[in-house]
Image (cartoon, rainbow, N blue to C red; front, side, top):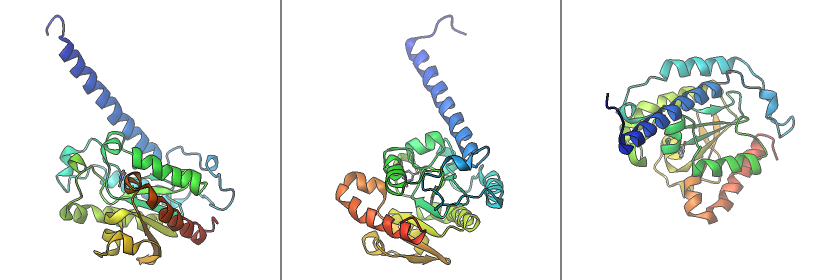
Length: 241
Ligand code: URA
């Protein structure tokens, strides 16, 4: 052991500690968001409209997470810090499906917590008058593609069954597919998102509304209007209008 550490070594140790704490925090949040100890009554700003009942789905989703959380089916397992399973209410009437975790999500193990996530949270909280715990949020890929590159077809192929199972357990009234990857993957189409959005499609008997991804809205604020129209259609469908 050296008697004193150089400032570079101290910095490196600090970075490693910080990263370990963040990863641990992610795992704790992931565990909590699997509804262990969540007080459902706390989060019902929409009054009785979004009736939340803690039930069997909670157990099923937790069991499923425990089964898949150490997934090594694709090389993203080697580069991820945290697997990002999903967050929210397994009894939700609406599930938002994004593309894949980014750096913030990978760090914390929670979907949509970066800048795009803040925008999605605004849509849910300010627009729909719900909380993130009233809905369920997840992604097509559960692990971050390095450098935020697009998901590869083989990654989607390995990971999609996890999403399918989540959706089977939750069985929401509506799925909102955020962006091209989510919409095209779930609907098995190459039609552009601009042509898919604005109307409901069928996903295994569940109504699916494609809309633009929040990250796209950050670059193209004028697309907020059509997204709000799509969200209003969803609200009508689940009785929140
Ligand atoms: N973009 C996504 O598609 N998903 C996330 O979880 C974050 C950003």
